[in-house]
Image (cartoon, rainbow, N blue to C red; front, side, top):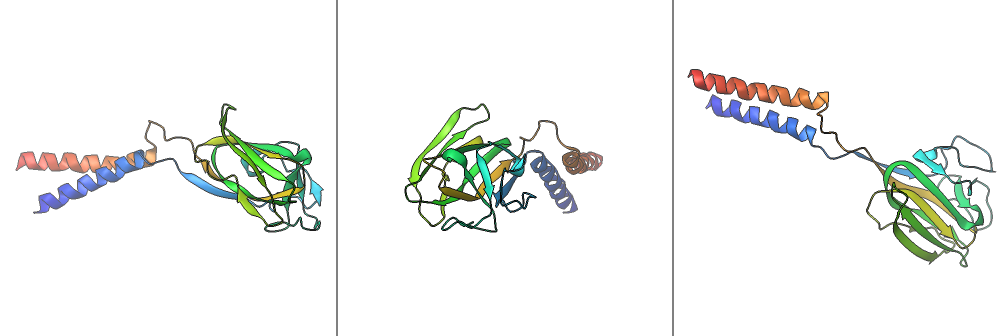
Length: 198
């Protein structure tokens, strides 16, 4: 009876170790509210590497009230001069969309690009309203660059949502994985030795 219990415990330890070695890449959900940029200027550039991305110089960080142009959350939001701007992440992300509002004459579209700079998805222009709407969601593949294409600069973008994908798990097990699997292998070897002796 004790042999079966020990055998099952050893098998469980081995399984936990193997699961630790083959775990899927971890991911982190992020929402950029533009309130934590470290700047208090009323109008200015987005700081370098904000949110892990390189922002084109077209983007303007903005915290002044201007008629219907208010932030969705906090005090800051952004818009792109001449209507179009891009941001490129340093690692692959899953883009979950961003909130946009603007004049009804303004349309917003997107081009999503992979790490090689190839367009992997296009979202046609959508007419904006004076109420924030989530736009750009729907593509489920990994991307690096988001290009926002606006018909003019009469819009706000706020609360940009994305999930950062970590690098794939390497073929070489990490020390923590080995720490889990080695006791399981040792227990299996010990049980085999005891079974031969009996």
